[in-house]
Amino acid sequence: MKRMDKSFKVTECVTWVGKIDHELQTFHGDELSTQRGSSYNAYLVRGEKTALIDTVWTPFAHEFVENLKSVIDLKDIDYVIALHGECDHSGALPELMREIPNTPVYCSVNGVKSLKGLYHADWDLHPVKTGDTLDLGGGKVFTFVEARMLHWPDNMMAYLQDEKILFSTDVFGQHLASEAMYNDLTDTSSIYYEAKKYYANIVAPFSKMAKLKLQEVAKMNLPIDMICPSHGVIWRDNPAQIVEKYMEWADDYQENKITILYDTMWNSTRRMAEAIAEGVKRADPEVKLVVKSTSKHDKNDILTDVFDSKAVLVGSPTVVNGILSSVAAELDLIREMHPVGKKAAAFGSYGWSGESPKVLAEHLEKAGFEIVCDGLKVNWVPDEAALQQCVEFGANFAKLVK
Ligand SMILES: Cc1cc2nc3c(=O)[nH]c(=O)nc-3n(C[C@H](O)[C@H](O)[C@H](O)COP(=O)(O)O)c2cc1C
Ligand SMILES: [Fe+2]
Ligand SMILES: [Fe+2]
Image (spheres, rainbow, N blue to C red):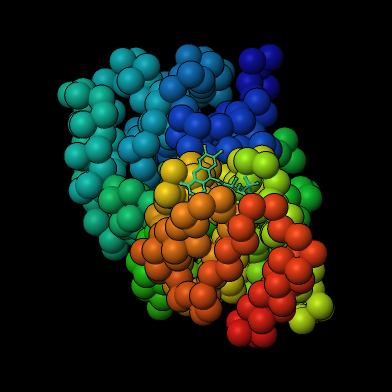
């Protein structure tokens, strides 16, 4: 091993050549929080010929190509496979392709569009479809499986026969920086939280397609010893577990959980939220209950809480005949997740006109929630009687969604 070499041998013929990004705190601009960092997984696969699957995010392009040179003479890369055009995986292609401009790049039909649109480069692109194969010789044959809209039109998976490895692109991935590389060597609850957060925030809008794709892949009966996603740990120990989880998540997932969300200017709506939580607990001591402020807590973690809840209670004071902006923004994120089969109700404090519960209910209905009861509004600061009303409101809601 040369000094620069940061590669990692996965099997005799598969070497990880990606980048572990411990510092990443946000992704997609500031749209997605990534408190546990991430990794951009790229793999060299060697048969008689050699293929490189994916690269890394643009800021690490130079580091990636230099490291790759310490692993392999770039001229010995016979094929590049771009499973997804997004720049967290294709970002080093321009620098790499400058060195090996004639190397064919295999991608999906939609990958041709995204790679051309993103890089405007004259690469030798070879579009492939589900069922197409690429034979590296020595028994190493890839079968491609398109994963359209998981989460871009161009996503594609590659199954390596013989080795029984599924290179699954963003599917089954997690924004998680783990030097340990494998699921069995990394804290399980962190992996599952990040996989679920990834699903809720990135994949959930396309759950219908995810469900169909998972069923299609299941019917192919591919024996899978290992799943190598493009972010986070490699699923080596019982890789079927994450496929099964995805099947549950793609199927209108919910747990026995209620999430209460609110924002407040002068704490009246917060006090309402706390009293409502008290009521929920009294009426259903077994329900998982989460209370979060849309302005103080992380918006993507909140979304993850809503993803596995059966019901939500959302509160905002009335502000200029409407609701607070952090609540509106969170409800917009929630709408993008396309929640199905979840129930909701609204509440809030007001001074004179008191529109917030009605406005919240409209947002919630538009997002796909079923409103199960009238909203609760309290004039100015809640007194003891109003707090008691909140407790009863929470208890009634818990019973309605039980
Ligand atoms: C900037 C601002 C705008 C407001 N606009 C309205 C309004 O349009 N209608 C209304 O009923 N109350 C309005 N209020 C009054 C608040 O809804 C009221 O003070 C409420 O108790 C605040 O709840 P909070 O303590 O949860 O922030 C407004 C208050 C502020 C500070
Ligand atoms: Fe992606
Ligand atoms: Fe990605």
